[in-house]
Structure formats: C-alpha cells, structure tokens
Length: 377
Image (tube, rainbow, N blue to C red; front, side, top):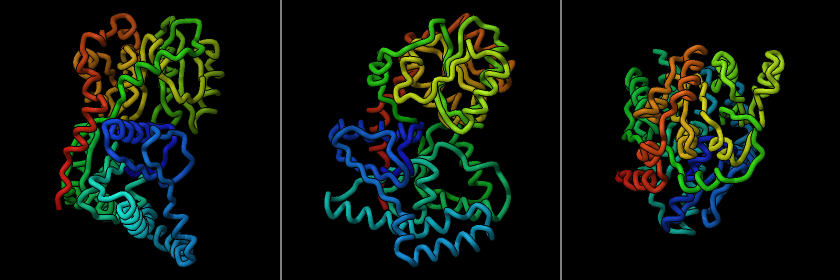
C-alpha cells in the first residue's frame, strides 16, 4: 500500500485499517509512506517503509537542477502542474522500489494507493496490479485544456476505486466531460475495525459534566466548525458541544467561541488518538462539512451507538446515512442543521435495530472486496 502521509486523518486511518486486517487474515503487507512523521502506525508484523522520492531525487544533483527548472518555468506556465513534473520521476522511483521489494520478499499481488497526494507523487507508474483509491473528485467541472491536461495524468487508463457511489458518479461525469477514460472503475467503502472501535470507546476519559453533542473533525474551512457552532446555538438545546480535533482554523474557532461568549458550553479539546469515548457518550454526532467524500466519522459514531446529523452536501453522506438515519440529513444551512439537531435529540434513530447500517463497513468485508479486484494485463 502507498500513502503520502500517516498523520491523523481519514485517508490515513483507512490505510492502516486495511493493512491491519490483511495482516490479521494472514497476508504479507507492506505500507510505503512518502512524506512526513508517523502519527499512526499499523500493527506489528505489517512492514512499514518511509521513502521520500522527492528528497532522494534532489540529492542526485541533477534532480535539484530539474526541480529548480520545473518550479521556475514549467509550473508557472501551467498553473497547478507541479505534480506532473514530480510524478514523472516519482513513478520510476516507485517502480524501482517495488522491484527491490519483490527481490527480497517475492511477487507482489496488488498495489493499493490511497489519496490524491500519493497519486500526484507517482502518477507516471503504469502497472496492472495498481489500483488507486480516490475519496474526492478533483475540483469543479471546467472545460479547459489545463484541467484536461492535469486530469489525464491522474486518471487516463488508470484503475480507480471510489469510496462511495456519489463520488464515483461525480468523478465519472468530470472525466466524461474531458473525454478521459479510466481503465477500470470500482466502488469499495471505507474500512472500519468495528470490534476495535467498540472496545476503544470504553476507555476512561475525562468527559464534560453535562450531557453533550460532539463533532470529531479536522479544524478547517471544509469542515466548517463556524457553521457547527452557529447551528448548535440556533438549536437552543440544553446539551454542551464538544469539538474533538485540531487544524489550521483552531485560532479562528477559539476566537469565535470567545466572541459569542459560549466558553462554558463549547469545549474545544484538541486532537485525540482515540476519539471514540467522546462519540460513545455523546447524545448526538454533528457533521458540518461543506463536502464529505465519505464521512468515516459517521460510521465510527454509529459503531459507538450514537446517531448522526449531517448536511446534504456533495459526496457520500447519503451513501453512509441510510434507512432511518437518513432522516437526520439536513438541508445545507445553519437553520436546517439546527432543526435536525433538535430532531435527533428528541427522536433519535435506534442504531441497534439496524445492524447492517455499520456491518457494511466491517474490515473483513472490505478486505474481500479489495482482494477480488482484477489485476490482469
């Protein structure tokens, strides 16, 4: 498996979860990390590799000259094309890495790459065993030669896995507009170790003294914690709000909490390696994202027994929140989110009455879907 980073995030947790279940079920698994420090690590027995192809190429000397040339001339000429020039050599580096791995460990059956950052780093690699997992669609439809040029590098003749049906539909529409044909497309959901989540949710942590609703998300523009806080206040509920997460918008959110004078009711507790106790003990999980390709936190919250409210935004929310849970999908507004928060507290869906709601994402099921992917030439 190839991933750009192993920091705390949905792409990274899914990479680790898939690696762990494959190893647990008797497969030899290698995870290649291309950048950064390790915040998440797979189970003992999973082979972990850290190789920065960009740094390795620059150290050759000619790579440094190449990097300066492309940054100074080619990237400004074609806006957003920086990954194109890096990926040309990144693909060769990955090919060489795979060969060395096979020389030492034997043939590799499948190569699973997860996340846009990883695709961009090594896009030039062509290998019938390679499937790339995309969790979003790359931008708005623009009928331009530049977008067509960039999309062809990432998707033309590639084997692509989308993590929800809605993501797949949007990606197919975008590629069709630019007359780009992937080699194969598949849809496979995200990976959840349901038993581990349920066990970790029982960890003893310091919780608010009052009943609360919760959000576990990165503090960012896309996740819209400002909308969350305003919808929470508009709902006029008795429960506190706990936000578990960190990110570039933390200072802005802290200032908003002070400005609104709700420091005693809105608790910003930072990132947690194990957020599940807060999910388990919350009365409701509230998502407020502008878009959400999948929403792994929704599955995790339901696994902890806590129903979810989420806005009807582009992505996979409607693929995750189905059956009775779907009635807590709100219109995409502060007032709509507030109304569903009130409904969710007054008349919550009963998670236990619908086992398939979360069983769809059990790690062994998702593993079998990955193992069934074709890899013929």
